[in-house]
Image (tube, rainbow, N blue to C red; front, side, top):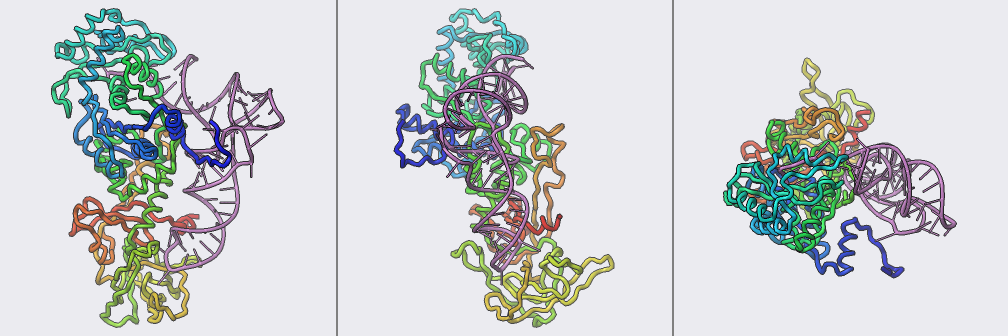
Amino acid sequence: MSESASEVRTPKNFLEEIIERDLADGRHESILTRFPPEPNGYLHIGHAKSITVNFGLAKKYGGATNLRFDDTNPVTESVEYVESIKRDVKWLGYEWQQELYASDYFEQLFEFALQLIRAGLAYVDDSTSEEIAAQKGTPTQPGTDSPYRSRTPEENEDLFRRMRAGEFPDGARILRAKIDMASPNMHMRDPVLYRIKHAHHHRTGDSWCIYPTYDFAHGQSDSIEKITHSICTLEFVPHRPLYEWLIEKLGIFPSKQFEFARLNMTYTIMSKRKLMQLVNEGHVAGWDDPRMPTISGLRRRGYTPEAIREFCARISVAKRDNLIDVSLLEFCAREHLNRTGLRRMVVFDPVKLVITNWPQGKTELLESENNPEDTEGGDRQVPFSGTLWIEQEDFMADAPRKFFRLSPGRSVRLKSAYIITCEDYVADENGTVTEIRCTYHPDSRSGSDTSGIKAKGTLHWVSAEHAVPVEVRNYDRLFLVEDLATAEGDFLDHVNPDSLITIPQAMAEPGLLDDLAAPDANRPHFQFMRKGYYFEDDDSTPEKPVFNQTVGLRDTWAKVNKK
RNA sequence: UGCCCGGUCGUCUAAAGGCAGGACAGCUGGUUUUGGUCCAGUCAGUGGGGGUUCGAAUCCUCCCCGGGCAACCA
């Protein structure tokens, strides 16, 4: 391949390189990928990576992507999962060309099996699963042939048809490929193609009692759909020779399999089995608990599709094992929410602040911008009065020099309002501050400040008389250890007992509730100023509004303070 | 201990024989009516040995380390 000297190489991941090569070689005129979830659980952030890889690649190269459910194991699968998966893929912003199911191909797959049987490449085995396991050998020792391996094609076809007809109980017989029991690749030691399961399937009902295994269903489904690039995760690498063997022996469309490293993230588990365990054992409230790394959990938490897509773009895709720092995901959320989140003031831990020189009974409506990053974002009005709530932590009776907040004799700006100076405070017998007494500077009003006073800090506040109580749910990581894969003991040993901290009654500016959208409309994302990004929870009602912390603001003061 | 796949800043990821670059995290400073944002700066890497080459992260070789494979799961 000759390239002109002026041509600039833009960084590409290995899959892009493969696709560009295949397109340039004329191997394919266009590409078709597929996203193949098994409907036996909810999608998580690791699936989001796979989704952006499969849909993103197709989009980039003018191809398309099928959504295909790998529904070959009826005992663990259900329509609930199918529906959640469709919802999540759509929510992430992707459109599939066709919605398909491996079960759509059961009849065709049965024919493929017959084809192999007649070619002497598959046989019915009456061994028990224990016997078959023993025949497999070990990675370091070759396997041994099954006593049923030499059955004639006629006998095999007859038995296989009778398996389908329901003549045998579960586990009595299986169909195996006849390949090589001594292969160094365990997956080539006569793998199972069909097993008997008298189980109700969520789509095919009771019309089948034999079901193809992953290995027999997946590649053939790809081939039937003429998938050009079948992209999966690394654990399927050893399956690739079998994938190719089946396609070759069947003489069908040569889909090709490519593998990438699955996503691992710090402080996070990604196994569907373990996520289900968290749900079933009540460690979390459900698949969509905001602490879960599921798409539905992230959505409920307030993550946006934009943030998740950006995250997937930034982690890129490669073949080496990885452990992505969860702070990158948080960064992507902040980046998007900073641009779009509506600024609102909410006091989490209120203490009363009285402005002693404020005219008795006066309320003033102040303008405050919805988003300083967005000049089109407009303003809102916030009521101000002589009695306010501010954060307890924003006052210190005896403060160090670098504390840019309230303390006797010090001045601060109240966001979008006035500069105030602390004159005095009241504490109870335990030393807890119960009231802070300040004076305000009338000529320091935000936007028309002629006071000349420079306040080092700015505080958020809520007028006590106008404040509305809301519940705030703050989250911390669900696990206490960074790398669950190498952590000692069971993953449940590392669950963070303080991953949810509920503030039952925070005080919000009144306008916050007016912002809440109608039930099915898109909910707005908020930045509670100086706190973090928040999103209305599904539990929220007009009587009892509830907000989830999506992610906190970066807090360099907390860092300094810790030292 | 057989076969397969990997190994580049703390974490991800580029560099296709020719200046090891970017992002996140960290740290400094500046701006700021959010201790946010933004801006500037800074710290930090080719697992090891040998070889080929004018030149190696890249090619060869040996070693080391990590991961996967023995479901009628996907």
